[in-house]
Length: 189
Ligand SMILES: *[C@@H]1O[C@H](CO)[C@@H](O)[C@H](O)[C@H]1NC(C)=O
Ligand SMILES: *[C@@H]1O[C@H](CO)[C@@H](O)[C@H](O)[C@H]1NC(C)=O
Image 1 (cartoon, helix red, strand yellow):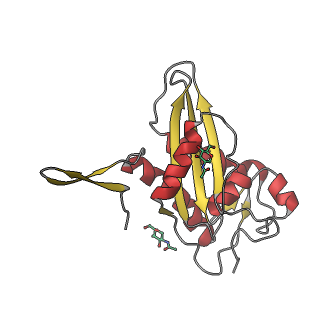
Image 2 (tube, protein in one colour; image 1 turned 90 degrees about the horizontal axis):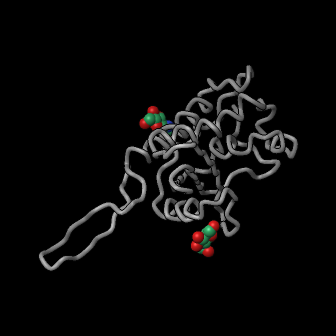
């Protein structure tokens, strides 16, 4: 089901396959699991956004799968170490997140932290309408709705340590892009 990002390198003696993905499999799975748990909960009608029970989906919200090209693209964004959305995206949604500390940090647990910083928007601001009206979008839930967006089924994330390893920048990108104004995040039952 899950495929590594692989390259094939030819050595004199034969073939050797190894992973060149910046992100270890366990971290990729952390990103995927977090997104897919959210999607599955919403799909089943079990998601409660700041006290409001959201309706189940008409058709199951598909799980996201990892996409190595998107991972590379997202890694380029995190490598900039600048907390600004990339401007050169075609049919690619994007969530970014930065965290910093007074001591050196590692990527340990960062996927979950990024995910939490985005998904908490549903609890902080509520989710008044499945339709992403301009008002809903500007209520501040755009990262959360991108994660939940039913038609975004490919995911790739990159992360970089910046500023003497005291800051981390995480970028996740999504295809198809989500957050179309006046479209449904998902179709309710
Ligand atoms: C998503 O993945 C989970 C865990 O593997 C699985 O239980 C669920 O049925 C999947 N959802 C869909 C819509 O395929
Ligand atoms: C998109 O922008 C990033 C920086 O944000 C850059 O590293 C990358 O090469 C650009 N990609 C394309 C296809 O232009």
